[in-house]
Picture (cartoon, rainbow, N blue to C red):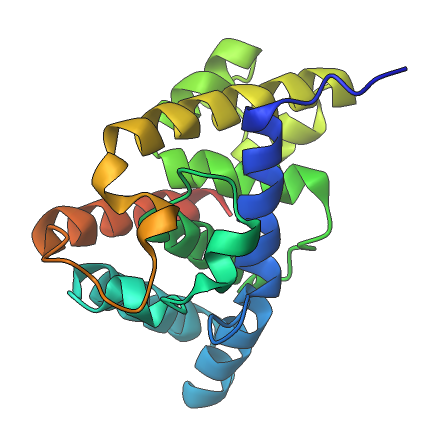
Length: 204
């Protein structure tokens, strides 16, 4: 039977794989979390705040694109349209989850982290899937969903991310090459990263 997985599902898979495993000079979430924990004397919540601060600064930096390996390593394997901002946001969410002893190989944790990357849009998608986030945490609610329903949520997340990437065409991953042409809207990207961080800290 042929696979029915399309671009949105592939996008979610690749975004999470790069966020967790890293690529080239772009360190994976566990490595980032470990460095933050070492720097804060094993204080988990201080390490979370350190990860948040560093990711907001990266998002605000005009060197964001080159700091993600600017290089062609991302272009080779990531789906067209994946942007540095959302890869960075996925790594932030994964690092927060790892610091709080969540298993990054758990598909429920993956879904929750990607909901946080979408912020309010992600929570809306989760609630439309049937989660009651007033009376249950995001992780607890997701664990109560049948796997096929959670898979549908993953697909919807992929569609929403694809839509966002299309709107952010100037940051297409195919432009992540050593020479970056112009600013990337530092203030807007820093605010977007701060929003992702707020959701990650609240839900993971």
